[in-house]
Image 1 (spheres, rainbow, N blue to C red):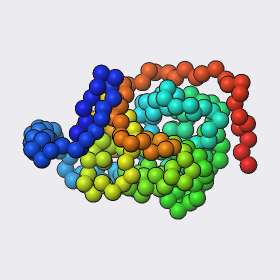
Image 2: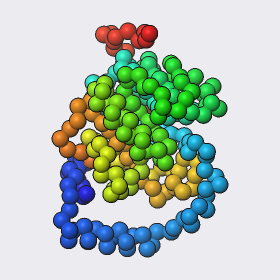
Image 3: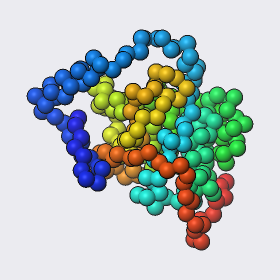
Image 4: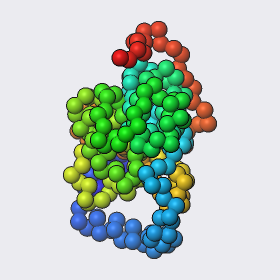
Length: 248
């Protein structure tokens, strides 16, 4: 797959002819020869047992700002983070929509206290085995479980007609073994490389995207480059016509 950028920082993705793929492969091979390689398993002893790495605001703000600028979502729309961790992603959303209703699912009970501080309702369980509420999804799930989380998110979108967003490495979508997965409608590519989330293996050589599912599938995937966000988010004024925040 190849993407061509347009002046508005968006791209259209398409398949390359065999000769073009060979050329791209040659360039990638040349780059791999000059980028330092991390020895296999060198840092495995530092890996969190649940593959937990926080989602810093620097990574989640581009998604929040894109949603605010390109959708009609507001504080009355419920959200779920099925891999909530300590609630960093939820906290960033609350900077934009303070009154939003958030569900959080987390398998590691040690995060309970910090998660209770930002989520309205939490469930300490395996999200892949638990029932998900009818809410929009935003998540930075364990990379080793991305296939299962993405498939569950796509099924959730199909059932409830909601938004979904998943934080992934760029290379995740280039693997041949994932061609069967539901195609993202939007890929928000970070134009900068945030450092790893507590593990050097995901350091400055890793590029990331937010893979977004619209409530109704689009006909093509749009690749959008997003710049490093400003230091602070500006919350919109309260909406007089907001729907009730009460949830049963």
